[in-house]
Amino acid sequence: MSNAIRATLAFAVMFGLLAMVGFFQSWALALTILNLCIISAVMALGVNIQWGYAGLFNIGIMGFAALGGAAAMLVSMPPVGNAWEAGGMNILYSALMFIGTIVAAVLVHKKLPDNGWRTFLMIIVLVTGYFLTRYFYEPMVSAIESTDAAKTGYLGGLGLPIVLSWPVGGLFAAGAAWVIGKVALGLRSDYLAIATLGISEIVVAMLKNEDWLTRGVKNVNGLPRPVPYELDLQQSEWFAAWVEKFYAADLAALEGAAREAAMRTHMIEASGLFVKLCYTGLFATVLLIVLTLCVLALNSPWGRMIRAIRDNEVSAEAMGKNVTGRHLQIFILGSAVCGIAGAMLTTLDGQLTPTSYIPLRFTFLIWVMVIVGGSGNNLGAILGGFLIWFMWVEAEPAGVWLMSVLTTWLPEGNSVKAHLVDSAQHMRLFTMGLVLLLVMRFAPRGIIPERSGR
Image (cartoon, rainbow, N blue to C red; front, side, top):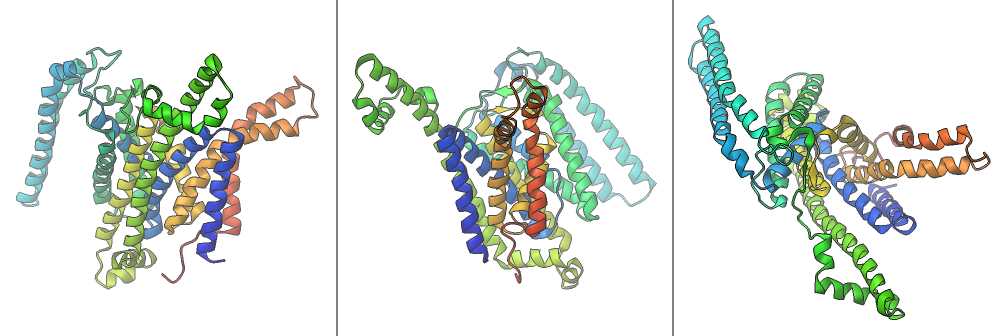
């Protein structure tokens, strides 16, 4: 079976499953799952760029997604004036001290000859810069975090449209990837995995503990939306006219209070669906842009060079290719895509919740998406993002239904029946393992594998 037929059948089944959720559960839930599937697909494309194109093992996806989430908050939330007055200048001073320390250390390393004095002076510069930075940093933290701590206690952001945070999240993730790549890409692949995991844990720890920046575990709620609010839609005349026209058949038989109540119900349901469809349009646009760029890059001479390096680094290096430089390039690009997806997810959630950045959600699941969909194939990564997230969400309700059916012969109140139904939440992990095992057994290269001979 060709890849085109595989992809057509697989996506047809996938959208059929989403339609079943709409018919048998609710269309609001179906659209919510669809939006999360699109975001997961974007993140899976980022990992596929790294692993499928170049064979780079990145297990720090969580950190890059967290940087995207932080970008959404820093760009969209309005600045907190009182907090800036309390410690904003010290922020600038400490940042300047930190940058100056790094620049001074680099200059000492480059300008002085390689002897004992160079190392000694570098240590002096770094230690002095550390204490100067802390001198401005510590009072600033205390002053900002004590400013109306229950409501704010942080500096806020720039107050710009939240859509602008999506490319900014990509830039944040790309910067972190550059630092990691400079340190670890010249070493063995297992060192890259360790470095990405370590950096991601550092990023998440900072988001959880630096209250002056992200409010830590107190979360930042009420992020601005790039789409209308349901209440505004319900109060707008054009939306009311549209809903009345759409549900004209249902409303025709009603009059008076009954018609008003039905209209109010339809307005509430329609406004929720409309908002979710707006998110779907925005997210699908980003997915199509990223997919188009990935396809163009993969089919270009640059893409062929990247795959040649992946397949045989020694031969590629012997032909004059800068293997480490290309690895750094692809690592930055893939991480940037993950950062964009992280900003999109925080936009959809409407809040920054640092405690939600756990490895199971942002590392294990994304890797399963890439492996199941088909490593090295862009459509395969997208399919994996849709399929695995759909199964992750629906495994628990399906498990409850399955356990209820299997235990119908047991009387109500039976301890075994109650235990099986209560344990249905664990069907998620069981389902992920089962899917992974089946795919590895019957389609080891993924549902839509990379085309051979490329």
